[in-house]
Image 1: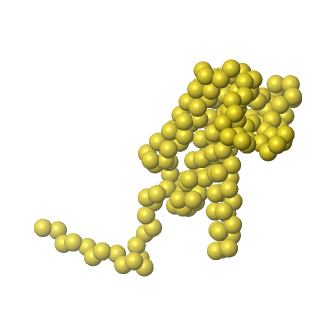
Image 2 (image 1 turned 90 degrees about the vertical axis):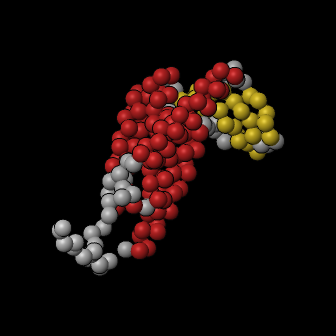
Length: 176
């Protein structure tokens, strides 16, 4: 029988790498969110005619529009080059954020959630750019005659993820 070695004390134990990287759970969340985004867009395309507006609440409509630009129709009239630019940007940002999961940032559930949300949103819209040449938008929020530019679930994932990422960075900045 081999002698057992004493367990390391908490002061000398090596930090565990669990919780870092693109784990199966994180990969499943990423794929699931992209699927939810793509499924919602397919449902809109199948059930709402292009350009149609369906009132839902006093300040909320479902619509079916295509956006060849970026968030809130930024660069929508740029002539087509933006399709490729935003595709490359989405892939690069997602790769950078997902790589961050392998570092210490990946230990934070806030960072991990932000990285997954932003990546899912960016990649969901990138799929639209490749498949359709534009992004399907269908959520229309307004007050009186003032409409916020139409958006989709991927845009929502990105905005929530950016908010979480800012919160993560602000908290991290205060600690060190």
